[in-house]
Amino acid sequence: MATPHISFKPKVIVKKLLSSLPDRAREVLIFRYGLGKDEKRLTLDAIGKKYGITRERVRQIENYGIANVRKSEEYKQEKAVFAEVEALLHSLGGIVVEDDFLGHISKDISLQNHMYFLLVVGEPFKKLKEDDDFRHRWHVNEELAKKVEEALKKLYSNLSNQDLLPESEMTNKFLQHLEDVSEKYKNQEVVRRWLALSKAIGKNALGDWGKSQSANIKTKGVRDYAFLVIRKHGSPIHFRDVAKQITSMFNKKAHVATTHNELIKDKRFVLVGRGLYALAEWGYVPGVVRDVIKSVLVKNGAMTKEEIIDKVMKERYVKENTILVNLQNPKYFKRDKDGKYSPAE
Image (cartoon, one colour):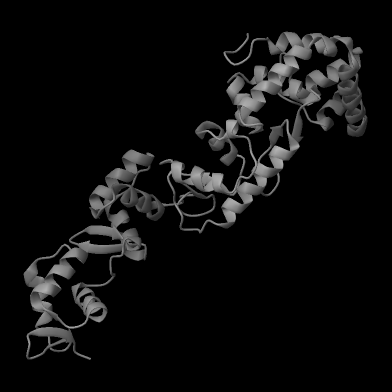
């Protein structure tokens, strides 16, 4: 069946192209690319065992088959098909992750195999194999591919492990590193596909982007899930609600007691009230109320009782009386003749 994205039927085209080959070469390509009833792609070794030949001989037959398909009259007759595939690749960004491209065509594995074969034999299409930085990808413009990959490397080098950015901000940062690339490619959908090329950059379950190996993206446990929950909430939240949100947002069972224990242990979180936690990155001072009072005084100098209460209440969800009781402790705070307080030491 033709898909909504292409006007031709890949299986019909591939069958026609293979008809130009001798039986052995045709069979090897069918097994190698999963073009028959069995959609599984066989290895060189598996095919070699079928025919009682070496894997190297299978490779030679495969290369012979592909070369001869390209030379055939049947290939020349399908010039419009390859032009359409090339245009589709351009419309998706000119360089696309292999799985993304095939998934765009169809969810049917057999149909994907036939489309993949057309990419392999099509002379305009170049495959770049997976490496440390990027996934398997196909392109139709080497210069564009290099520019996109260089921009992705620059983007990565400018990210910290703590960075967690909404998609719009990440795409804007990425575009800042792209030079001399046609404006036709610079839309949200294409840029998202380009970001997906990178193995070093990724997004979490909430759609925010960062370094793939950071705890913000590669969430490993309750602490990491809790961080994302509180960050999305945007203000202090009770640990019971954190546990509930982990379960609802990530479909991960989080026990209340476990969640509380993990929040206590991690310096990313600050207890700001009875069971209420905020993120340290928001500027909250860690420690008990006494520590917060001291931090406020060190930062601002001697202050009146009212000034201290105002500042501390922005850091902690506590009663005024709790702050006053701490101020009365001469071991930690002293009051001058003007009624202002400062640290005792």
